[in-house]
Length: 103
Image 1 (cartoon, one colour):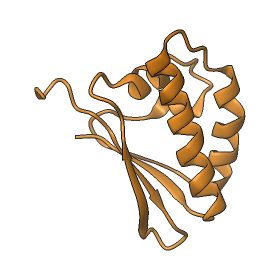
Image 2: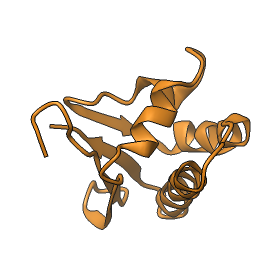
Image 3: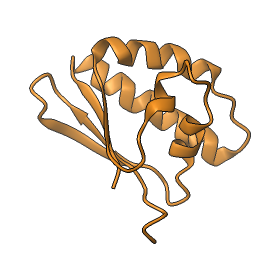
Image 4: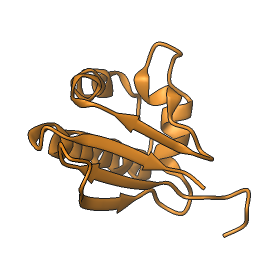
């Protein structure tokens, strides 16, 4: 993967910031591209590709509400939205955090 094509790591952390699950975006960065295409009012629009972006419990609830507004056109996009829903739900149930780790 070239320097310009960095897939995000997605970490679910518990309340003490201990990693409890790790996921990743696909090689085409489908999740990142979907998030970047959302309106400025969407929290996931702020995921930073070249650094870390963390969401807390309050923000995770908002993200789960906003997921319904993400328009999907392809199977990879549908899978990316399901991944986002899954990781946000896991983090919320753990009273923890969702961390997106860019390059």
